[in-house]
Length: 351
Image (tube, rainbow, N blue to C red):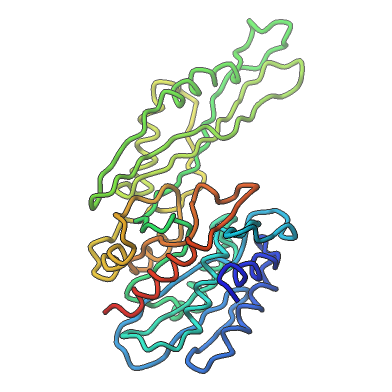
């Protein structure tokens, strides 16, 4: 079976978030075929570990779920596997399975984590479920998260802050708007302020993180004949690793201050932390060398932050172009899988 065919087998199993049980069962059954792995299933998360006598341990993690879509259209076309999750990240999962089953002796122990519910709200994450129920399974000296990275190491990740900005007004009848103040109209100046945002750039360990600020939702209105007295703008702020939650909220309040008045408020609704690059870690530096390409900062949030929170240095590295993830024609190529497999295999025998 070729690597594309092995990946097609995984892509053909539907595993939209919260429906990973079938794929988890397939992965578990494959991992239990060999004697050199200790395999555990926690919910729809599957963890396989070598349990020798080495003092050090490396961990490779990938999520089983996909965004919503139709897995039935998965197909091979030449050197491409096209289908839901092919790039994000079942191509990489197939390689992880291949290398996990390989009995090659390695100079450290290895943990393979196949986890559920990455593509939904972070609070539902299978990785957090493991951290709560079996934290011992996530202990390692360093970790690789197999997000699609185009075959380059993508260091760290951005934090993400969701905030709701509420502007106030005064109700009135729409026939007599001069008696009130339209809160929705007030959103114009606020949205213009957000649209003028110029991304902040932060250089950490020689990789550049570029922050972003976007308006993602608008809410307001009482009735068709009422001047609204409240309107809300939801913002998403992508934050470089040099800012924690408090610093991100403080900056956002300061940036929006000119568009706010007494009675308005900015509510911090949801936060996922950023992760530093960790490229100074010897093993992650070795991964960069093995990849043959210079590292770059990760655009977006990934579970490297979950490992960083637990004191485990981590980096993103996987097959497939991240720009193809979640698209209608998502695909991964044989060459991308081969490069990922060769790089990861070399890293796993490199002291």
